[in-house]
Image (tube, rainbow, N blue to C red; front, side):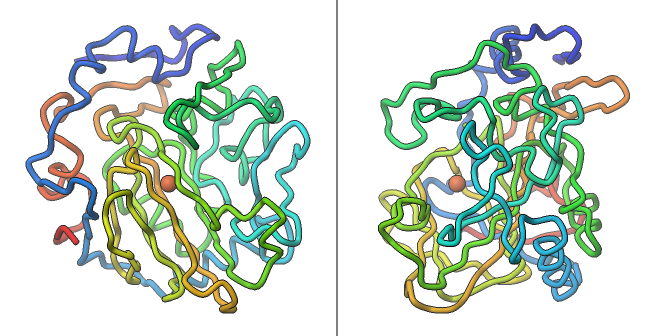
Length: 313
Ligand SMILES: [Fe+2]
């Protein structure tokens, strides 16, 4: 068993970096799943929630905790310290979790969405856009934007109304950096350069460092998710959750750019092998560490609090 207290981590490291360096995590994290999902999708069905109430609550979160005009926030940066979207920004977000000790003290509902220290040449990490991108990181990383595992407290936006149940009573695993994303396909100026959805291929963190549980709350037939080397267009159904290896390049695109529709998904970032203890401010490896891939944990019923069914689609 590994146990790491936040207090023992130096300022220059994130929790993940510290754990990679001081445990055998890097040797065990490339575990192969028994459930051979590869570059397909795992669909989770059977969840019992009031989906209509969840849709209403998430709409309310955008107007109550967003940036105005029912939009969320876009990337926080040196030049955009409050993450304000422009009129033509079609993809906006709200944070699901925040870090009360964040070194920039960002407001909770956009606390995970960037850093005021970020200028043009800095990336969240290497390889976000291109395989060979290298990250240009600031010196202090603990409790910074880069410290994904330090975002552990559920935000107002993700605790609003019926969402309180979903954010707190759906998953058995500790929450880490995640977001609520709204994509709006109303006609926008496609040459503006801010439209994430035109060419949105990207990779997220290693699956064993952040297993993203995607749950559609407002769905639209106009959007699909695509995965590299997989010809399928995935459309998510209300009532299900979805998981894939988001370390494989993927993107979300609208099929008809002129359709006046939008969709809202909540994407919980979860830590499959380490559990957070708030009182101690510590992370401890759990019984699945090094032994069971998150896909297998999900199928075996260790991830969701309710009985579920899974199938590869
Ligand atoms: Fe992604």
